[in-house]
Amino acid sequence: MSCRKCQSDCDALLKQVYLASFAVDDVVLYLDTHPEDQDALNYYCYVQDLRNQAVAAYEKQCGPLTADAVMADNYWTWIQDPWPWEGVCG
Image (tube, rainbow, N blue to C red; front, top):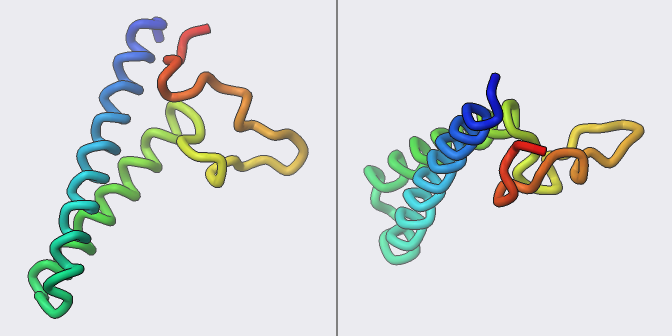
């Protein structure tokens, strides 16, 4: 896969993380004032699942998005890949 293709894929995946995260934040603000709104609670579960899927897809292809996603027993992989804002090309 070309460097440009990798970067484009990671950019698209990160955009999905941002979009889902915005939706989660938005519904959380609403739920702060409407805690018993069942439709909003259902929507929260839906967008939280979308966010989890987006993060998992990003991390699978592009590396950890946060330090708590590092999966290593003998090496600190957080520094192994470029940061999300640095791109994926070395």
